[in-house]
Image 1 (cartoon, helix red, strand yellow):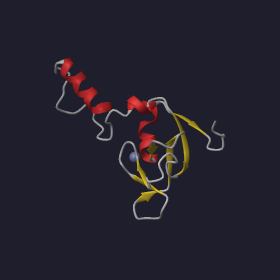
Image 2: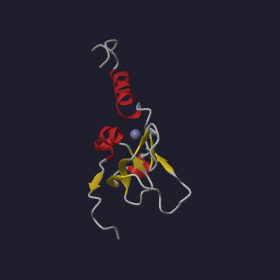
Image 3: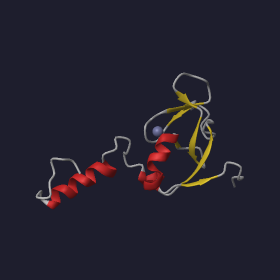
Length: 113
Ligand SMILES: [Zn+2]
């Protein structure tokens, strides 16, 4: 609770502030819960999206950190992917949002059907 709110503040205002400062305030959140809440993720080395070979990189679904196979400055080579490799999430964002999004993490060694 910030110092400018005291016990005499209107409760509705305080609740509004709390709601804004917890989930909704993170700049990385833009409605990803529609397609990433509760999904299964695999921790793996980055690889190109097999359904579209023209894409040579991806971005973290939250902070836009760049994933690439090639060795370039400021790119990531591994992270958490949806099982179809379509969405990628970097490790800091995974840690920050795993409770909120309730992801299941599976081992990359499990064969995909
Ligand atoms: Zn990220």
